Length: 98
Image (cartoon, rainbow, N blue to C red):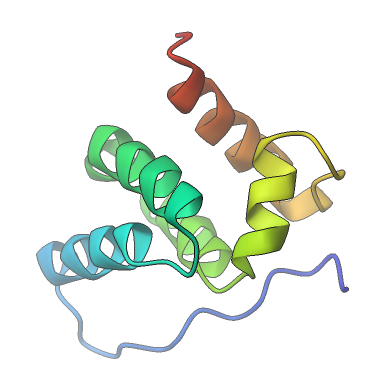
């Protein structure tokens, strides 16, 4: 596994609103139910407040394998450097700590 984020798909002239809708849908329609729950909650609570760079990173995160994501969020495996802060934010969101 590479530490570099995978490239998010290029959606060309996608509007901001459509981007958020697409990312919310991808957050809640994952491969495993646990990640559906985790990422849907994070998306609902955070996407609208994220800047373009943060959205780009989250979009790249959505390209990652669910089993890897789950292990990163739960601390079972170390998170690759590009995603450390974002995974920490996701873990904080689902834990209810603010």
